[in-house]
Image (cartoon, rainbow over all chains, first blue to last red; front, side, top):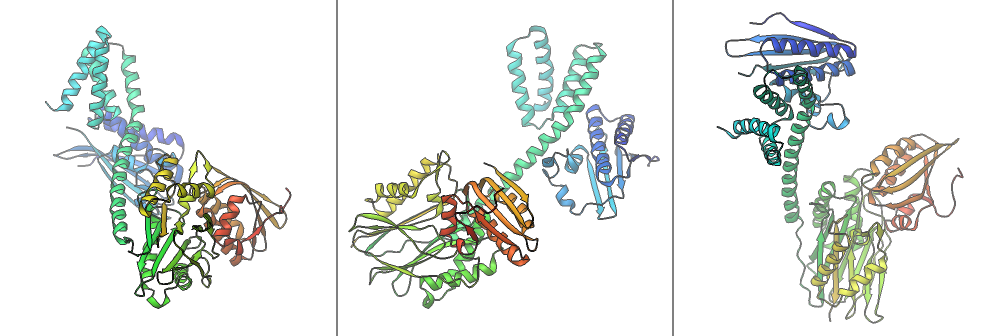
Length: 135
Length: 336
Length: 110
């Protein structure tokens, strides 16, 4: 059901671009439309930039989900950074945008169809998010 | 066809017409469509995409550069789309909060409701208006078993919800004090201990507590750092500040208060207020207490309730109908 | 209206010059600057209010907090150069008896 993962390690700002590009290519390949391709790229940017800015080291991986019912792209971002103490707070609208930090995680959730986050202080953060191909 | 599909088709046709004729009517049509897009939550990137699709269908095989540029534009619109969605969700949240606050405000009104006691020789008028939905000013009038009238006016530091929460504490504390302790000095001393124990550092309350004894016509009073009220002496035909010393409530647990008294004669008047009245600002300029007295004088001949209403209206207009602070005014006129 | 907070450190004395209005909006800023200073044992903080034209009860609240903190931490805080309106506020609330207010003199001459 799942194809093998492809990953981009995020250490420098340029890695964000590489992750965007890989995400867009995979999305295009499975038949995601132009607008959603742009949304996926923006979501990848946001997640990758969080790793670059706060965790310093981590990776963004992509997978294709292909079942009888639906097809989609799964993005898994994993880092071993400081973690997030209050996830509810960072998921609140206006929390990161008011500081001018960009769309933030609520933005990622909006750009994608499914979104899940796990985080532990001093251990790191894992974000899993899916965009389905629109029929 | 749903409205959305209708708009899409319409967009393409209007675009074609505009490119061919450059007429204002199509642009007016564009304005209508844009409103419909907003109403249906169509994000900017989708509109750009719609535009690209329309162009491809209308003019196939046109310059590749134009289409690439459109894709570029689409990409730059994504964040605007997010900002728009966030704005909408925040607006919904704001409406939610507003309705929550108005429920709280009406609870507060019920909780703090006080009625003006009927006293033969005293005409009492009261007005209290919050700057926002919830009132940080407190006033309470009560008739004691011995026939005395207790009058409290208080102002909590700050305004809005935190101040309003504090009000409930004052109300219940005042009610719990037994009748025997009901003299202004002791009431303030007891209340101060309660407040000091229950508020965080830096928070405080000012209160003026008065007690009128109809059988002696004497007003006993004490102040916990409250804005001084005014006494109109009918015989001398002048206003004076009612000065009473005393520290605000909540700062020091063992504060003692001094009690003063004033004998009211026919035609005398006592005005109690909060700093929302005296801190009125007109074009950035503060009004002085002489001006406050002037305004009160102008309406003093009216029945007390009408007079306080008129004074409030005057200051409301002076502040261009935007109260900066909660406003409370009590007027007591001795008729007999 | 804004509040400008200028902190100058002299040996043993910290001069805090305020300029603008102290109200519900600017009071948190003042609190954030002032309270940490009062945590330093043995230090004398002099607050110049010459250019403060307006202060409301939330401003008084900040000075009460600062006073309590200075008492707990063994520092000292003095206010000086108060405008009439501001001085009246301290007087009415009875706080002039708790807080050290220097009515005529300037504490530190720059």
